[in-house]
Length: 502
Image (cartoon, rainbow, N blue to C red; front, side, top):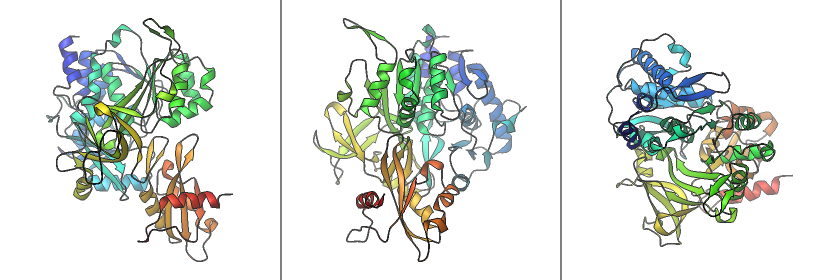
């Protein structure tokens, strides 16, 4: 291994999804890359690079250059490798979440215009290698990551190679060969947070012990028995780990806890810091706390754009939600006119950087609504402007419910419910939940003579939407609180639901 190769990987020079693993294998040859909890399969960097090349050959023989390819496989490391293989063949991958309902996958296939849908890597057994990766501009669109929009149907965020890889490839400079590290991971690969974590681990040559589904006891067993040093999850996972007895396990090997996709309660983060590795600090000496890193990002930014690090000995009360933009990212907090608010003021967070999406596939109006003419992304999140580019996240402007790290868009769920002939109108709101942070609850107006039992709305929802989008309760109302223009007042709906609950 030459340091020049490592630095080139870290800088992302010429790096694309299609060349990622061959470059990783060149810098870290024959290093362990992944072990799968369900199957016991283990892959080295060279094994995975060879798989990607063979699968790229199979994909090329079934499609044309620049075709879109939907990857609708179960969650697993193969979904990541297939995404790289599609790109290596010069096609445009669109990985979809394994929790998507068939109707949602059908929409992605139709919207993307995909010529191929991959349901399993087993379809490509025995195929010949593709050869050198198809030429690609690192600034060009590399993949479509679909996210539900507030207008209803999922939209394909056009993310570039440099956006998906540039922010994470910089970890290639870490001298990970000097110690034994392992990351325990149970995130969905098609979720941008999971994808970014897998990319970062590969670039740093940190092996991943991968769970296809999150089981808190199994994850705790793995952290404890394997003496893993890193864990990444959404806040709901940390809550479930705690409920499963994390405080009574020996988690002293974990040096770094990572969280994303939702706001992490400071006291919960502090408790996990205390469970982790003992850190030695100058003067202070040994400290019984690990480091906790919380990221802020979204599909439209190709992952994280800000990070809050809680080092040892920082009290939970000082955690807050302060975010420092990552290198190459700029923030500004603006008022309704797009003018920057003064320090201490609250407004909408806008950001720009190389990870920002090019646009939404085939949706120029949605693109214009998300991006300003000079390239700033309107996040729809509220933030308080701090000094030196730091912001404090204050909440969401959009009607988005964050359930266990997944975004549930109220309008999308409402539209699916209102397709039922017995539902006249629906309003979906988020209510607090100890495990998932928030959960969707639906208030519905029914047609005359209908009852919740006759409609069976849970079954109707299960046929049309992902499990995490299905409301946990359905409350029947005679009418909704409304504004002067007859718009439903969501905040009042929350109070109405709470008043109607037994």
